[in-house]
Every structure is written in structure tokens, then in C-alpha cells.
Image: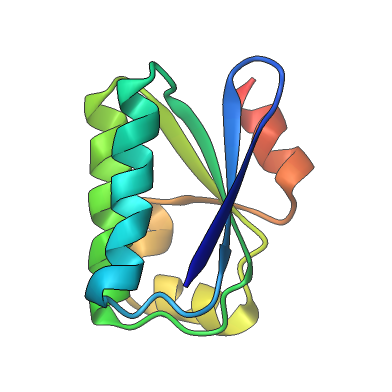
Length: 113
């Protein structure tokens, strides 16, 4: 899994995730990156998941831990560009009620503003 980030005006950080979110050391890098950014005072995030094909149960745990870390920092996290397969998984597990899903980065950024 690879992460790329870009900061927009207003302090919103877009984190593009490339690859599968399946646990292990690579996936833990997402939580580590969020913790680092939170430590720098950032608390508005959009996860761009357009390049994520698969998420397993460990990956779901990592996403939940990331959301919790951001919420503890009094911040907000939105998820954008989720594939149909990942969206179906979030619906089945009812995590679509916890994560705010958006069809595009622009829509997610507007929701944060």
C-alpha cells in the first residue's frame, strides 16, 4: 500500500491510498501518517480510495482506528471514490453508517468546509 498526500487551502489534507488495505506493516502506515499529521495540528482529512481494490477485516480495523484517531483530535475524516466492491463491504458491515462516503474528492472537501 502506498500513500500520497496533498494539503489544500483551509488545512484539508487529501490522503490518496494506492493498493489494498489488508493489514500488516504497510497498512499501519496509514494510521502512523494520520498520527503524524494530527501532531502537526491538522484535523481535516479526505481518504481518496479510488485506487483501492480490496479491504479485508484487518483493513477495516485500520480504517476504524484512523477515524477514531481523527475524532479524538476533534477532527473530521471523509472517504471519497470508493469502488463498488469496497462500498458493498462497508454496506454489509454497516460501516457506511460510521464513515461518510462521497463520490468525489470535491464533494468530500465541500462537506469538510
